[in-house]
Image 1 (spheres, rainbow, N blue to C red):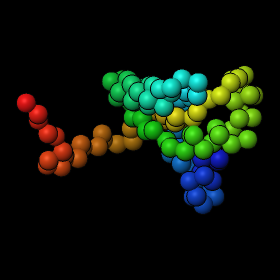
Image 2: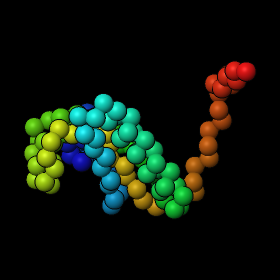
Image 3: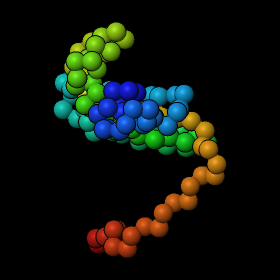
Image 4: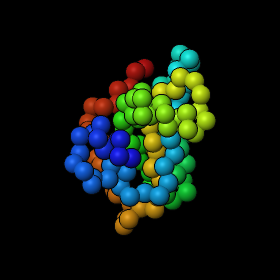
Length: 115
């Protein structure tokens, strides 16, 4: 989490993970030609599943930079994860503090029907 804060350029003490207790990390095998797409779909599905369970979630960025670094690769080795992996993102999950936010109004002209 500290590495994520540093990469993001935030001051010491800033919590880029919002104090959550659960972080699900998505990594994708770099040998797969579709690894970024597959990992992104995994993230989206986890976030939809969290919502279906009444939980909040957020995709935290900077995982690629974290796990491309020497420190990040060392963390993966400590966890017994071998090979070449790209960090897609940590998905933080927890209970929503307060009411669920209202969906923002969609901008006109963003959907085009082709017949």
